[in-house]
Every structure is written in structure tokens, then in C-alpha cells.
Image (cartoon, rainbow, N blue to C red; front, top):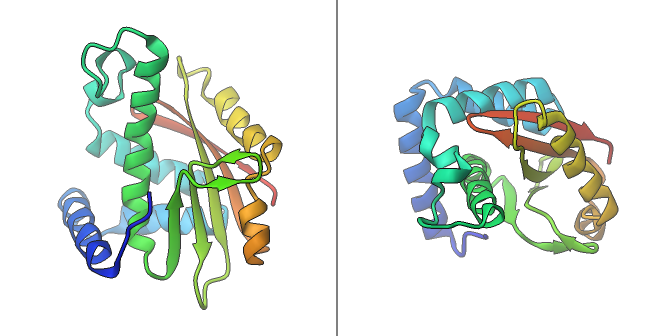
Length: 188
């Protein structure tokens, strides 16, 4: 997903920010999330993202058996729709970085398609590359986050950063389970 023009970007950011401010009026949680993300502090990033999941996501939204696609019997399709929830939530939070950063979703790079990339704009120093996985159990989250990092490497998703001349960026493998997440960071 890419926000097509400035007017829609402002509208989208306004709606996202209004909702976020209703949850955390001083925006400290959002600042913690963005700062952790852009400085490579996976612990702060994970803590803030977990708090957003706890505050914003419904149990029914995050449970594969109660997914967005009503009546889905294939557990793979149900898991994919739950992954879309997480993807959408993170993308909405990251929209607040625009226009200082370019936030893109599901873009082809290397040998596949990354989930979300944040490219630094003028005057910004680092970007980020995020890949999402959904775990079957809480105990499985670290393994799934490592799989996400391995996918970034195997598919060479960093190719778009190289093409743009971006040398400094963080790679994150993020695994979700219910209202919890686990984040692993990789080297660029």
C-alpha cells in the first residue's frame, strides 16, 4: 500500500492520529514505538507495539478462528487474514512518519515482496525493513521472528535499499501471537 497523494496522506494521518490520541493522549507510546524502530532498539519497539496491540486490537481480531474472513475454514487463509490485521495496524502507526519518511507496503524487492519498508527522506538517517509472521503459540514467537529475518535475507529484500543508496536501515522480523509480539533484529 502506498498513500497516493498528499491530501489523502494528510487525511489518513489525521484519522490515524485522532484514534491513537484517544488511546494515548500524550503520544508517548507512539514516540517510543517510532524511536525504538528507527534506532534499532527492538526492546522499546516491541514493548510499544505490544501495548498498542493490547489497547487497540480485539481478541476476536487476533484469533485465527475468528478472522476478518467470516466462514473461512482453511486455517492458512484464516492465518493470512490475521496477519493482515497486524500488517494494517503497523502500517497505520507508521503512517505518522510521512512525509519525513517514505512508508511502502508489499513492494517487490530482490527475489520477493517485503511486508513494509521505511525509506529515509531528506535529512533522515536510517530506515527500516519489516517482515511479519503469525505464530501458532506464544512459545513459537521467537522462532517465527527468526524465520521472518531469514526470509528478508534469503529473498534479498534489501535490494531496494541498495538501489536507492540507503546504507543505514534496520531489519526486523516480527512474530505475532494474539495481542503479543516478539521482535528480532538483523544486520543490514
